[in-house]
Amino acid sequence: MLAERDAVIGITGGEPTLFKHALLGMIETVLSERPDLRFHVLSNGQHFERGDIERLRAPHYRRVVWGIPLYADDADLHDRIVGKAGAFERLHDSFDHLLLAGARVELRTVLLANALDRLPYLARHVVVLLSHVEQWSLMGLENIGFARSRWAKLYVDLRTQFGPLGEALDIATLHGLPARLFNLPLCHVPSAFRHHAVASISDWKQRFAAGCASCRARSDCSGFFEWHPAHLLDEVEPL
Ligand code: SF4
Image 1 (spheres, rainbow, N blue to C red):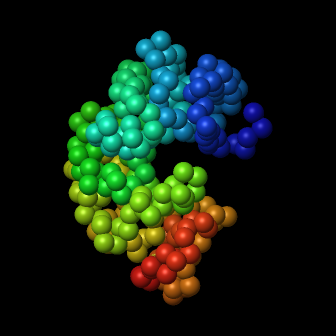
Image 2 (cartoon, helix red, strand yellow):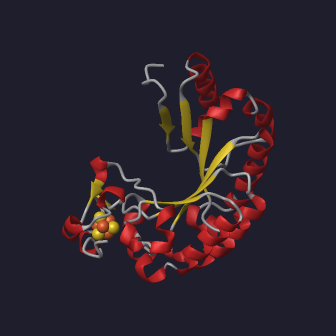
Image 3 (cartoon, protein in one colour):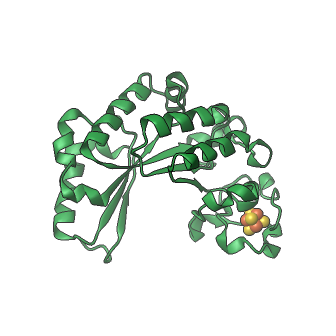
């Protein structure tokens, strides 16, 4: 209730929908009192049920975006990545309920080496089965949490492996699905795809390489996370 006027309040986890009714009650209470506010909620999408549809149809929820990850079109691969058998099927049940509620969904896919080749297939899956999502966010891996111990296996060097991502972006564009790239240095993205990139890393956790000093694109560039492996920081090509 004390938020600045017109703020977007982000909620992350853990998993906020483990406390779904408390969460929805809080959102409804705040949005009733503060019609200027909006919410962005990160969720694994495992807990939406048919019984939620009517509630989520309420006008308040036009000011709520659900950020939900999907890693692959292949159920086994998605389940392995999130570490839960049956997660893919359960997620798609939730997508059905959210679609019927008219909910706003931002689909999120972290770029991982073990799912990179599936990206064009995932793009087709999204444009055919999940065309109601309002944005597809494709995100560079952050060297933090579970990714830190598996960095060498999961990190994708897009300077040499952009092909599947480029194909996925083309498929999304051809079908009118807004696709955005987050957390990626602009010089790691081929020029034809740079318009998809968002300067998304906040300045308090942003880091640039020494070579970035002479780059004309620096003000439009995400750069790197502060905790990006130091030996990879020199992999820049000033624009
Ligand atoms: S050289 Fe640095 S500032 Fe320029 S695009 Fe690459 S990472 Fe960004």
